[in-house]
Image: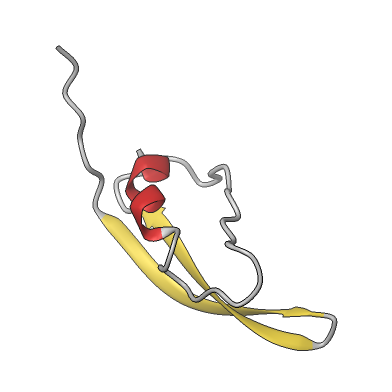
Length: 64
């Protein structure tokens, strides 16, 4: 039986510009990582959504 470990997460609020519009973002990274460079996943939910409305359940899975 496989044991799933849940990494400790560092959450960093951030912003970026898209067509001169400031967009809010949150960067989630595993604290235990031994790597300087990590792969990235951009999770968006489409028009009119808010952060964590549809993406929160996926964050822990992808950080593993």
